[in-house]
Image (cartoon, rainbow, N blue to C red; front, top):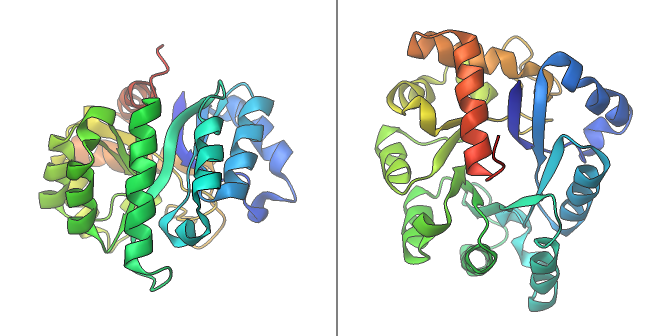
Amino acid sequence: MIFDTHAHYNDQAFDEDREKLIQSLPENGIGLVVNIGADLESTAESVKLAETYSYFYASVGVHPSDSAELSDENLAWLKECTNRKKVVAVGEIGLDYYWDEPDRNTQKIWFERQMEMAREVNLPMIIHSRDAAKDTLDMMKAAGARETGGVIHCFSYGVEMAREFLNMGFYLGIGGVLTFKNAKKLKEVAEYAPLDRIVLETDCPYLSPVPFRGKRNSSLNLPYVAEAISQLKGITKQKVIEITNENARKLYRLGQ
């Protein structure tokens, strides 16, 4: 069974058929899904989804693009949420320099605070890093992220940065972008990274793999990503599915 380590089924793109689609996942080979908190609202919605569906888990956190909404009060609320039985990670948190808002200092403050929270509650971190490789790495090292562990979501840097994050014990999240013709850098990373450090993710409803690029994504499309990895690694798609499932369970400390 496939483990989707990063999904956003609370997104309005799923409003018309959310329940039907989610209920169809197990019969289509999707065993487990972690729904991701990206702001305060989606954190609450992710926890609700995890409590509704036995094969769903949740993360809690605020994406760098929404970090200006954070305060001491709602950070305390996020920390309370980590006590919920099916919350398995803090994230997605990090830095995103593609956008100018909020300012970089605001992003850094709340990235540091949320990493501190992850360490306090002893949960792995889901890291979002876009156009901010050096600052992300430096801040993770300063925060002792190696001890907490986690995943670099939607990995988008080259082999050199992959090596740095792998050396910290982090997993690399790989999704539909791997199937794009212009994804040369990511293909090199997928070849380089040991298979036991890779996890599958969709980031749905975004980043659908070829042949569905540009359309709404869902966990049902993950076999295309597994196939792309299998071709790069020279092993069967089923082997990729088995090992990445095992990796995801280790990442989120779920056991067998």
